[in-house]
Length: 218
Image 1 (cartoon, rainbow, N blue to C red):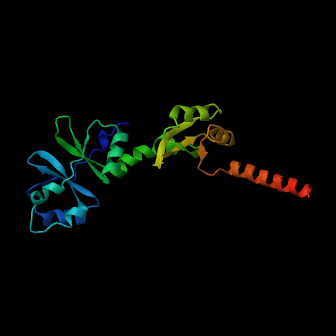
Image 2 (cartoon, rainbow, N blue to C red; image 1 turned 90 degrees about the vertical axis):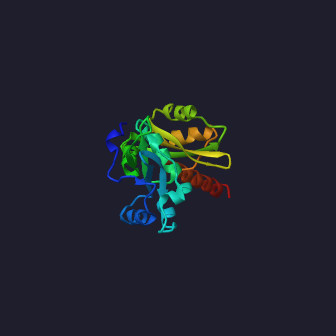
Image 3 (cartoon, helix red, strand yellow; image 1 turned 135 degrees about the horizontal axis):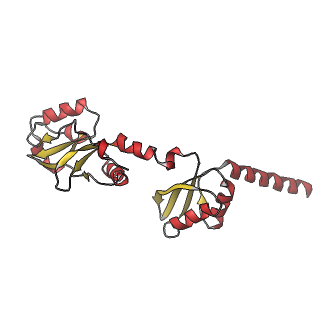
């Protein structure tokens, strides 16, 4: 997906010689977590709003150069890598540099998120399955094979959680064959974390059958 038309330049980077007082005023008028900083024509990093409000108003940004965060993306960086950069740096603004390290502008998190919202993973009608397995025991090819072998389309899959050598994968599929897919995952030793109505119906049916057997054998 092309991200070039999402490049913004309406907030100019602060020069490193700017006063902290002016920086704090800018943050008070903006909703950004960070503001880019340049030294001359060179981008040197971002200053966070949290840090800026802790700085002495009588000083300048250069007095706190150690606190600058040097994150950025390139103008041709893939949108998923841009989204990852936002997450890694807990920012809602992402500076963009050319291959020659020229500052070009920035991305807003909301604009890049809108690209994700327009993917089939989110906007196609379907269902979500969350499965869990050991971090060394799963494979995407196996997950896709389980879904597709049951005659259902797969719109996307990603690792949504890793904890204590266990991983969880979130899978978006078409609506058909949900129960068969759930049961197949279990046969392949995946734990199905998500709840599914068909699965609950079969569980209730089994419990009633067991109760009836117990009653008839009294």
